[in-house]
Length: 360
Image (tube, rainbow, N blue to C red; front, side):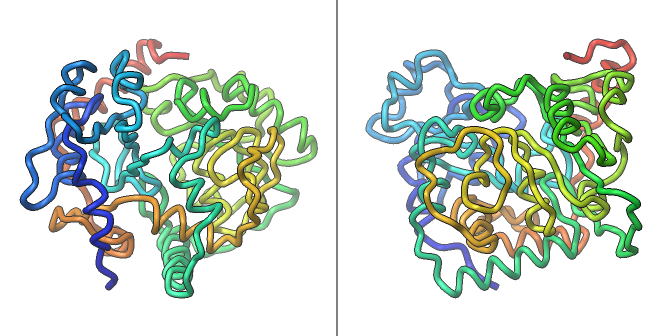
């Protein structure tokens, strides 16, 4: 199986400090960014202290938790990190640490306001036949095994007869940075659902709330009565791979569901400006990102997004690995331990839903 390239490890060796990292994922981030013979990664959340401690090294930051003033003080030494696209078995909001992250030196993939490392890869990379062959095999495994960002559950292979065109609308966390940066003026989940109904007046529309929102942890909850004004069905308790197997297309804002739908041959209508829009593979309703001039094949998009951009960690050895190893672990049935912390977090979500204190 393909080994991780040494260039990735060298690329991270100058990162000396990390900011804005939640305490429960610090060990995992240190596993990603630390290296043999390298000084331990320091976690400092004060901007001035972080810059001083880094010296002439780089500073990694989780963008949604960036300390005030850090961007100005760090300048081009700032490195943004975020969950990868095949993240884990289990929700981040349930405090499952990521098994994949992205490390971006120029921007971050969900912010179309500036070029990210991913956009640069997709715009300029001369994809080799070897990389494309790996990407095709990865895409096949993801579809066959029912792998998505938070789960691995094979979809039913029994075809579902559809009497009319069926559309999935993917809900999102409404205060997520991907919407703030790339939402293109769409005012949240209900507005997205309204727009999808206007664009597809005769379709059977399914709405799937975001799992973090449904778990009671994040903003974006709406009463079912409001959703049913525009949706024919509210999809809960069904995996994303199974949902995608029974629809003709999806409407998304910036959700990764659009990328996962492309892998499964569904048509994708995009109302925002996610990383996978603007390359000739989607129906784009938002203004174009003018830097994206290349027409990509689906396999080239997969190669850049899943092979060349993210970092992966083997959950068994806890060492860096290529994506093939992580997907194989999921396919073999690897599951994370259900810790007391995860149990407590789930209980908090259930209580928030019962008391009606989930943010809207």
